Image (cartoon, rainbow, N blue to C red; front, side, top):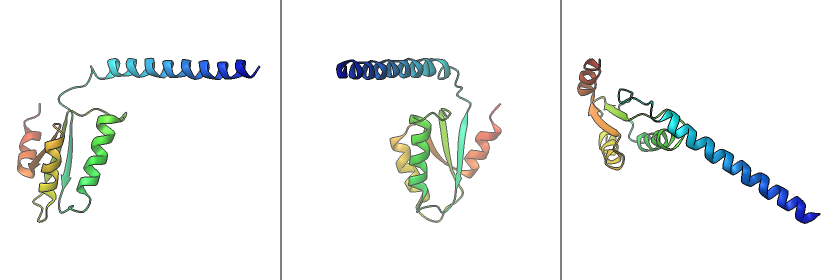
Length: 115
């Protein structure tokens, strides 16, 4: 009797895992092909040396590995910071190719050129 109960639990969990795997594969093939190159996430920062690295890492983790919207372009627009905010963001942009660090003027030009 115990063997039957353990076997039932095992097969129930196995079918649940298989169902979740198929559901994730369908989600990936359905929604990742519809994404556009024209979606930008612009983060404007100024003098945020203490929290910029933690904020960017948590945001990138949610976007790249979570079920948030997939942004191909994440732009950090530096508003003429007087501390090391821009250097920290540039260091992170070397690790993540979707992250770009620009100044505010370049950000305005980019937004003006979007159709």
